[in-house]
View 1 (cartoon, helix red, strand yellow):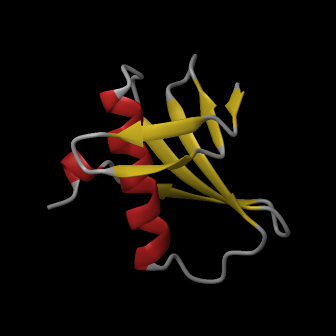
View 2 (cartoon, helix red, strand yellow):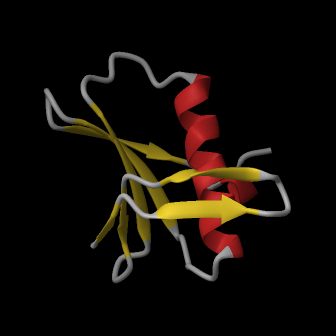
Length: 83
């Protein structure tokens, strides 16, 4: 499990850090304290992380938001699957 690594997308001119990435399951996970609604900003944040990870050579097959307080997961579509 990779946690808190810095990622950069030179193509999109973005930089930041990911929360968690499981290289075995190829899942990118973003944890939030409490998710009541899945806001567009959460999804766009994960899309930016996805593109930076792919540009760096990582394979991402799934993305998930995780709400810490209530231990719920919310699947996020890959940007390639979301027109």
